[in-house]
Amino acid sequence: MLAQFLQFLFSGVTVGATYALAALGFTLIYNASNVINFAQGEFIMLGGMLAVFFAQMGLPLPVVLLLAVLVPAVVGVLVEKLAIEPVKGAETVTLIIITIGASLVIRGIVQVWLGKNTFSLPAFSGDAPIEILGATLLPQSLWVLGITALVVAGLWYFFNRTLQGKAMLATSFNRTAAELVGINTSWVLFLSFAMSAALGALGGILITPITLTSYDVGIMLGLKGFVAAVVGGLGNGLGAVVGGLLVGILEAMGAGYISSAYKDAIPFVLILLILFFMPRGLFGGKSTDRV
Amino acid sequence: MKKTPFLGLGLLAVVLAVLPFVLPNSFYLDLAVRMAINAIIVIGLNLLIGFAGQISLGHAGFLGIGAYASAVLPTHVGWHPLLALLAGAAASALLAALLARPIFKLKGHYLAMATLGLGIIINIALRNEAQWTGGPDGMVVPAMELFGYEIGSDRQWYWVVAVLLVIAVWASLNLIDSPFGRALRALHGSEVASQVVGVDVARYKGAIFVMSAFSASVMGSISAHYIGFISPAYADFFHSIELVTMVVIGGMASVYGSVVGAVLLTALPQALATFEGWETVAFGAILMLCMIFLPRGLVPTLAARFGKGE
Image 1 (cartoon, rainbow over the protein chains, first blue to last red):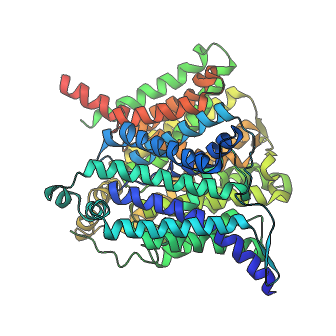
Image 2: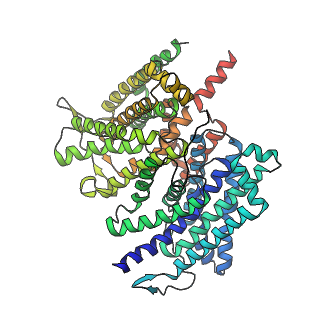
Image 3: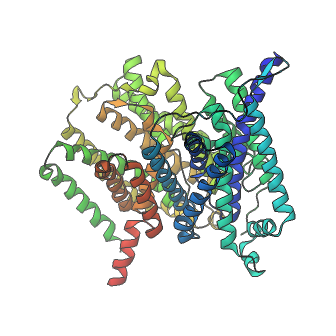
């Protein structure tokens, strides 16, 4: 009983960490520009696929990690420069279509370049499972959780203790006011796309040894990351992390105890229920309209 | 001013009447049928997105309900196809009516999330209930019959959807010009202001959602009968996005824009087939370019340009 529960919990927290990183990516871009970046999932895919590609070239693991995070960050910046900046202030639906267009381009290029096969990546430190109270934990899960925790702590420090981070926060509260006090808001936008793509890619790399990857994994991972971001209340960093873990854990529990066939539906049922009762997510606060 | 929209209706009817006689072969006739089917769906969706300002990223879910009602009920339960079509449409409308209140309390990205989720849940259900739906492989749809006659050939279907398209354009032009349509546009402009002047915002949003779901479901059924085969991909997230893109590329809040958007985006994959492997990239790039250079859509942009010229 307990062993089974722990087993589901471990796998849920591991996947949830990836959702949390993706949700943080959504949050960063949303705060900087009010855009929901539907290409976020493609950065997750890109991270995993590039890691496989660089690893097969025989590069050492740290270099693989670095490259597989940097390249998606550059792609993220390109998307921002070429497609988002020219249409500043466009309608929500226009921006949604632009980012979906970007995701198709990224996915299409990877499909042509690396093919439609499923790829695996060796775990960072072996596959010997660790036994805890009858449940098993993969060493890779510890990597996922450890690095995610480091990243979250790093982000907290960045937003609360550095001038850059505070400038980004200020921009998310009030763009015009931020510009008036001399914050370069287009730099903030640039930085948020780079960071968000890098976060997504990192999640994609970390989870690939456990879940495998292919050119089309980004769609579902991205949408679930979006669910996680909305669960916590859009724009709320803490909410994104909690939302990611919550979505991951409930998905694993639902798959284990209720129905594994409906595993992918669970995050979406969850978000509908949450939105019906709390229209701005768990941490979104009360909505007030300015008339 | 008021004459122009209906002039377009006459033009559309003439084009539709002449088209089957000038199309060179059955490939183009098939394309024309699919364009008309999409145009009707997009007209309904545009009423919701363009006129009422409420986004739906899960509309293919309603297409799926209609299509699978038309496939499953005659096959497994032995219902008449027409009855199955109506049952699907009623189920879609009922689902939309039940969800309208909680969903339309949401705004912007939260609304996008909720509708997206709804579409995905429907899609996953269709994928998983394999004993009914054939699962990811899909299933064969029995032929439609009306008063003992089977509608089978492309040409017969062409006339059915052509007539439906003219009715859809006429009905939505009328709807927009009715008190109901004005209320919708008012709530798009400002919900608070329209509430102040007595528009029951929740009721109007709900009504237009139910109408567009009903129309999508009927067209889903027709599309299923026409193609003769249905798979869950018909109801997936990407198809929902395609429909929304048709609305935006043609022009939000433009009935003729809906038709233009549907025609262009139905033809596009055919045109891109020559790119061999690069179709997805080309499709994505075209979506981005259209939105960057024509954010208001084709028909409103052109209309504005010609208006200036005069």
